[in-house]
Length: 246
Image (cartoon, rainbow, N blue to C red):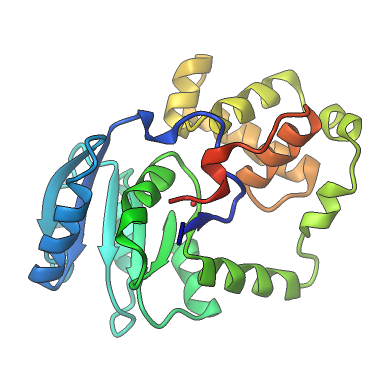
């Protein structure tokens, strides 16, 4: 596939098992129509429709929407739009051209759940939506390489080899049973809210557990943590995290 989840492999559960409500935001009406048509072929997606991305997010029909696909250019900084949408509790999948490491950092700092190049394979688009909807960081391969290269150059950045050097017993001894339950639920494609409901805790508690695990294992994100625990438990790499559609 042409997009992937750089946070790790896809979860062992099917992340497409949950319905996602999607809004397409693009200034070009033809592009909006095309994207809506492509996504409409996925029966697991409910397409709210399309909106001119130049309109302020306050005018977008975001009620009940789980993921916004924001197709944009860097002639206008999308950061403010991303922040406003994320503040409404909606995930953002950003599609653009002209990516740089700095722009990628800024997009994620603003709260984007995924960043894709515009020449992606359209067959992978709905899978990318499911990945972002499930809480994974989704990137086109070119951007994943850009992100990993930039991270590896940052002083004190955690490397994949660091966690790989730990024995299974060392990994498992660092986390609690509850933290393992949280990661297992996330590995099966549940979002933070869905994991909270399953475990009868608040979303804030789930996020707290994840944050603690990241610190304990010295990993950058929750998908790296999921993979580390799965390897420690002897689980095979979850197919849906291998390549997102993630």
